[in-house]
Length: 528
Figure: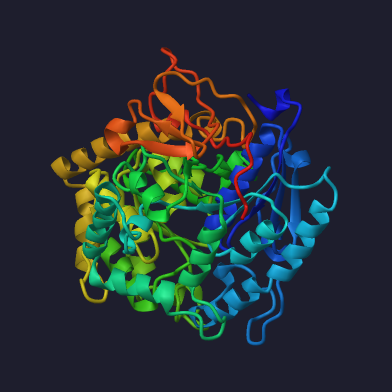
C-alpha cells in the first residue's frame, strides 16, 4: 500500500554521514520514499548538498534539501565538508565540526515539531549521529539508525550480554571467530578507526556509534539475508535491536540524474575495444592509495598485459605533484596501446554497462560492489579500509573474484600480486570461467534484490499498513513480528517490528526476506 493511496503519508528526516559513500545511497532512499508519496527532509551541509546529483523531477517536489552550516573549526579548511575533502591528519577536526551540527539540527527539529503538520514521524540517520538520536529522544520522535553493511559488524568482536542463553552466546562466538580470521593489518586498522580518534574531537568513533545505537528504536540495514546470508542473521542479536533489511539501494543509471555518459571520452575509448577485454579499475574516492602503493598497482596492470581503463584519483602524499607524475615514469607511454587513465569524474554506471568491460578491479566499497555485480562482472579485489575487507572476503567466498595477495602484517602488495590476480580473473581460461559463473549468479541475486527500483524493500516506505498473519508468522507480546517460515531455514527465527509489510506471493506465505519492505509502523516504538 503506497502512501499515494493512503490518507496519511509520512514525514521522514534523513541525515547521512558526511561522505559520498553515504550521501548517495541515503539520497536514493529519500527519493524512493518520496516516489511512494512520503515527504522527506534530507539534511546535510551546504557544499555537500550542492554536489549531489539533481533530484529526479518526479520526486523533487516531495524531497526538501535542508542545508545546516558546518561549524568552523580552527585548522579545518573552509569548504572541507565531506570526508573526501579532508586529509587523514584532519579527520578529527572534521569529526569535531560534525559534532557541532548538534545545535543547528536541534533547532531544525524543534521548529519541525512545533506544528503537528510538520512534525516528523521518523528520523533516519547514520551511526555517528549520536546528537540526532538525542534530539529525537527529546522530541519523542522515533529514531532509526541506518547502517551501510552487515558484514563489518560481524567482524567487530563484542562480549555477549550477561546471562545470555546458549543460542545467543553462539551468535557472539560466531562473530568472535570471524574477528579472529581478520588479517592483522585490517584488525589494527579497525581498532584504530573505532578507538584511536577522540583526542581533538572529544569522542571516539566507537563512542559515537554506541551512543547512537543505544538511543535508536531500531536498526535499518543496507543489506538483506540474500546478500549476506552468513552475517546478516547475526546482526539483530549482536546489536540487541530489531533489524530491518533495506535491500541494496542501488544507484540509478546515469541517465536518471545527469547527462548520459555515452559521449564521455572513456566510453568512446571502450567503443573501440573488443567485448569483455577490458578490466575497469576504480578504487573509490574516500581513501586513496598512497603513492608507493598506487605505483605498484600501475606496474601490476602493466605486467598483467590486459586492456584496462583506470579511473584514478590523485593519491595521498602526492603533494603538489602533477597528475601524471603520480604514475611510474613512462607508464602511460608504455601502455598507451591498451590502457587509458582518466582523472576526474567518469560515468561509472555507463562504463560498467559497456560490453567491452569484462572485469572490475575494485576496493570493494559497498556502492562499487553493488554496481559491479548488477552488471555481472567478476572482481579483482583490493580492499583498503572499513567494511571493504569483510566485503571482499564475502565475495571471494562466493567465487565471484580474487583478492590481490597482501602482506599479513602491513597490508602491502606488489606488482606481481596485482598482475597474478588480474590475469586469473581476466585471462586464465578455467579460473576466469569460474569467476564469470560466480559473478553471473550474484548478478541474478543482486538484480532480484534491487528489482523494480528496490520495491521489494522500500515498497511503501514507513507507511502504516495492516498485516495479514497466517500460520507462518505471529506477533509476540513485546510487539515484534516473529517469522518462522522458510527464512528460518537459513537464519532461525527472525524478529522485526510489527506490523511489517509482506509482499504478495503465490501461496500467500513469505518466501524470503526480499518479500519484506522498510515499512514499519502503526504502533509508535518507545523513545525512552
